Image (cartoon, rainbow, N blue to C red; front, side, top):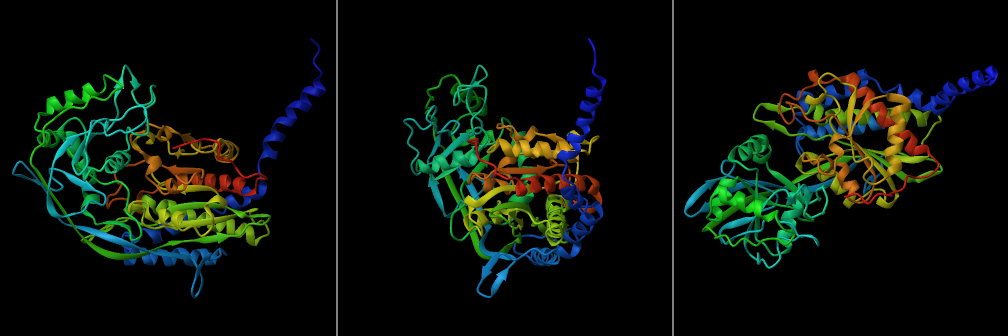
Length: 526
């Protein structure tokens, strides 16, 4: 076969030309302004002793908010919040803080100790001791294909449920396939279903053995000891008592072994089995003290040009856990790292606009408060948006990007991406192409699985946008030994890793802001 050498050479020359052409030199110029040194400067301020762990409503959080607003002003971002005195960088709102005053259970005259025998999460309020009848509702599922409430009266009673869902021969009895339903790991959904049926309160069984409960309680104890926060204008969804199998068996006057056998029985048929277990004599009291808390999201706005009515939102939470005595929970990775990334993104996009390269779509860079109290700042924004939600194109959320998790100890060149394909296939493709073209990071989708038991998709601020059908990407490095500990400090942060991930966010946002067509929602994700 005769080879046309001239044509072959010409064809080969086209290949690198295509790759170079696909890169945007203007985007590259401003991405280069995002540096490890600048990220280090920002984070050393945010995770300093003087900010005292940035707890929502406390002095350190207020100081952080003023620092962030001053940086936005320096970078040329506009204050978009209308107030009586003019435009502001602060979206202020009121929360209510609830502190445990007296919490206990009495089961057949035996008093059970809070944060030892059981724990409570959510807005439970039983200010006076109440007697309650106990009923067992299996997995607590109420779906068209499988309902544990068929023929079961739970009105005014305490309902006990297992986590998970019934599986037979490897298939979920809820979905009819090997894919678990959204009920499997969502205790809030289960608690909500019980409340809709008239239940007074819900008890969720943790694990198969006492050690499972003890491990979970150890992990959460510091968080559970802290006051909870919620809104003054609505009740927080989902509240429950959490108990080990042993205590659940006491409440149902059975044994641990028999209760676990009963659980296995539930997975044998699509038609739920109503197990007529007995009720112990239960008394419960949950008395709380309520006080107001005032806090604020910080908003910096870059107005677009011909498509300025469409808005990209980029978020991170700037609050953390605060202080416990003299011990400061610095939150360098969680989420000082994400907040520092926002500052560098503000600088890059602000500089681009000042030098004649504004985005076509508008960009809102928003460090939010109250994430550690239950995603409250982002929820307040989506309840009270400064820019209409139907004009909001995407939320790119950055929460912990400065450390390594156990699975990547030998490979810092990674980031977990969560949510990119759950609502928009276009968003996922744009994200992948930005990485292939510019940053070459290993994109790990492990935690994007629908049945991820960690439920990270639901645990950071992007979810308040996602539940309003706004496409999202969550950038995350996974947890580590210092997660929610006072040892989450700046000296352990990998700033070159942060630089690379922040540039990936920039390139993705640049494309989303400047492309001809707005990405569409074409996936019916949960």
